[in-house]
Amino acid sequence: MRKQKFAGWALAAALTTAAFPARAQQDDVPILRPKNQTTKPINATLLVTCDLACNWKLDSVAKGRIDAGGSANAKVERGQHVLVATTEDSLDKVENEIEIKTPDQIIVHISLQPVRNTRLKAEQQARDKADQEVRDKAAREQQERERAAREAAAEKWTDPATGLMWTKKDNGSAVNWQQGANYCRSLRLAGYSDWRLPTIGELQGIYDADDAGWHVKGNLQLSYYWQWSSSQGNASGEAWTFHFSAGLRTSNILDNSYGAIRALCVRRSGK
Image (cartoon, rainbow, N blue to C red; front, top):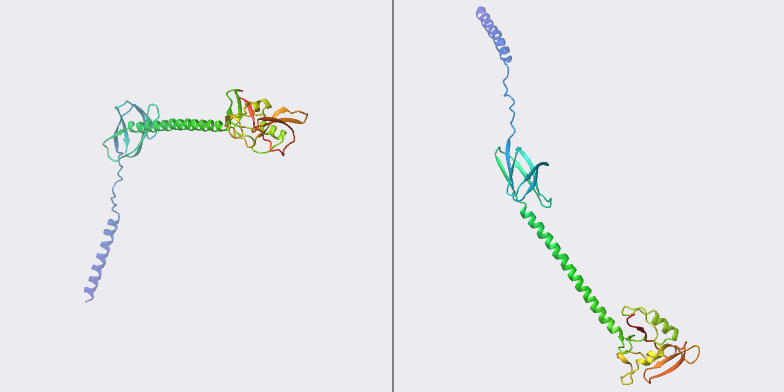
């Protein structure tokens, strides 16, 4: 019985000893791994055509000139690329983004004519707008001149017999002689600034006995029939005034402001 047990132990030990070298041998076997594979760059041929004569660039690198309807070639790698073409006068420009995925021939058609047409149309519209603005401005200026002429005509009257230009209205309120002279001297009317008080003879010259109202020519609008003149009256410190209702002259003291005397201004036309 003991011999049998011993034999079993010996057999087990032998088997265990035999297993260790085999495992060590297995651990020494090198592990095979796949080798690194390098990807070759994909090269494609880019064929560029242009409808107008143009200069073109690829990724900011100048590539030269293409005739209208002509073409040019370039080698490109895989990835994104930017193609820019401009007309020879540099006024029109097209920019395209190209993505290369396969090693094929890539054809890119550059259409500059539509870009040029759009620019020319916009420029023509701008010129038309500017011309219209000039015409509108000229029309407004003409209307303003006509309006000013109408207003001037309503503000003055020129006696065809004497050539004297009269204000259409007097000052409208009672003034003494100095106030009346100052009023005419500072008057700015119908584009003129050389107005003055008339002489007594000039006042008498526009008296019209046949005219209704204040008996004055030119349909002048008087606010009262007494009007100052620049002529000295009968005595020092006096000036002649004219009565357009009665058609007579009267000498009044210069500081007379209570007699409701007015100031009608005149100038020599053509000056």
